Length: 476
Image 1 (cartoon, rainbow, N blue to C red):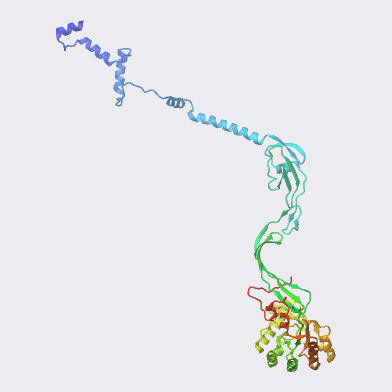
Image 2 (image 1 turned 45 degrees about the vertical axis):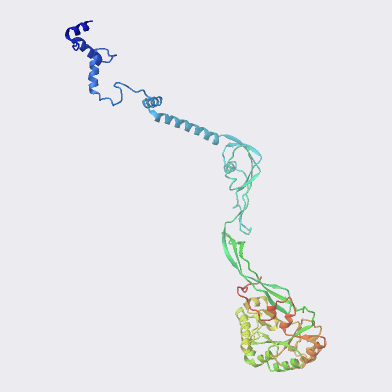
């Protein structure tokens, strides 16, 4: 009412002095203000406080979210998150200690060689053996071929767990879990360490057959390449994988048996050519026969024309070595030289290439074959010895050459080496007697060809060692 009266007296726009100032103070102060003093303090504080950002209501404090309140509480707590991490770490360590104690310190039972005992779980067999002093015998150390190198240097003992054989290496480290049945026995033998090598094994010389007038190379030797395991300590070897299979050289000894049932014999003459050679050739031609002449190389060198005459007459020419040495008594170089020089002399004088020979005295051993170096393919001796070298008389020479003869036999006579007058007289009688008995005279090569068991290349008397073959250096 007072205000209306004041406005009526002073105009509508006039304000009541006291009232306006109180209203202004009232509007400026917060409604919850305690009084003028607090309002003044608030005014002073508001003057120093920075202005509120745009869009915010002056004096408004936003409420924190639950997650933020937890973070604020954790940050306000003594030690914060590091305290909680430390607590968790202690818990983990405690659990680990408990787990270790359960898996390593727990006592379990195990049967060792029939007796039950208690051990910590996880105990190795080797520790049990050492602590219990179990009496066992160690195995031996063996070479690759099975020879004992050192006694007691094999496996110390052998282990069987629940019926399964674990051996030493695996068994000694087996950890007990509980309730196993364990058998600890004597150790197994152990084989020495080995190294793998590649070796070439040379062929050996072996013989097929015990006796015979013909000895020939039925198989040429070739080397074998293979892997071997060589013992590091012993040096012994055992065969491994074969990379190239070789073969031994084989000398076959036979007496000739014509396969077609024909009656064949071969006349042979040694030690020529000589002054008797032409007489023999004339007799052979006159009586419808042929023969094989085993000539000495040095004689061929001295009398090449008679050597050529043998070939021209249709007879066969072969070697009787160069100088008629007793070959088993010679060294290897001399033996090979005696053969090669004679072959060369024959080829030089006549153009005939041959690898067939007759050893002096019929003596040619396995060692002689080794020494020959593979230059000869066939050795020829005899079945019937006329013994003309004894000069027993014509009739005796004839009977020695013809009595009890059989098809495939080879008759020995001589061209040179002494007086051969008895031979010259005996030869036509021998031919006639055997012709009458139904025999045909052939060369040694043709006689070998009549036996189907002898390879054709050998029967020719010209076979040489093929490419890739290796001549043996030792007997098999």
